[in-house]
Image 1 (cartoon, one colour):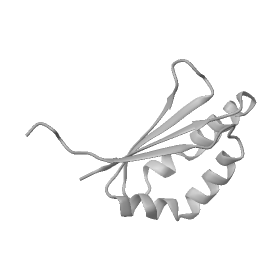
Image 2 (cartoon, rainbow, N blue to C red):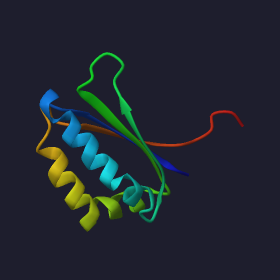
Image 3 (tube, rainbow, N blue to C red):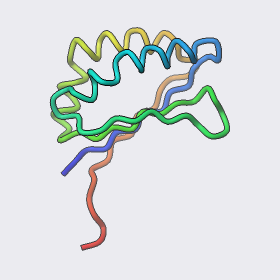
Image 4 (tube, rainbow, N blue to C red):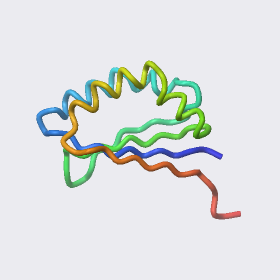
Length: 99
């Protein structure tokens, strides 16, 4: 059963380009991290300062391995300096409701 992860991040307007640059530099590394099956970046339709990452992980353990990795440390260190609000993360197991 896959784990779906959404992280909602709000940035200061002046830091949006810095965030996008950091994401672009690292997205392929994250996508190829053991256990990551999918990664997208979304931007809010009404507030351009709000972004969300949407990712699929093989398991919560694989996500946690990423969160403990050197790659995450590098990406997150740069990202968290750009926030205007505390990020909010949601995790859900993917389960088909139609049998």
